[in-house]
Length: 205
Image (cartoon, rainbow, N blue to C red; front, side, top):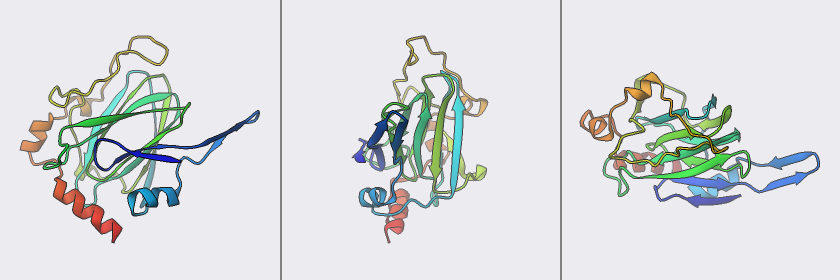
């Protein structure tokens, strides 16, 4: 498995080696030894989620308060999504910036996002199926969002699906009502760079 850190500190792209034969394909989409070598700590698995999305469905930007936050290890087992890591940590050298990984059923990459990062993805195909390994269970009281179309962040979302057809973006009511990044900062909702670094240091002992 190849591991590459994205331009957002704490976000990683993981590309597995695939073994194919006439029967199909086998791969290791998560491996603890590789993860610990790259991150310096194990993944504390507390919850596993799965979502199925029509083409154009946009989920996010979501993040959780620190501590304990919620790290996510995400892959797409069917279809394709553009997955985005967004730095919402106040005081971070890349605050407000973002980077992307294409998750699909061809290269079968994964993305890992440390606690404190924002996460969003856009489905590029009907029935795109995404699975997430999470370091903490869902807790509504400490889960927050930022509007994924906030022009101040400026994520360049695709306008065409994987088959070349035009995409119509669909947001949940909750995501549609989410504040901008500046509004979330003014409301004191965002984690800080210091909180995130202290928490990651505690995981590494």
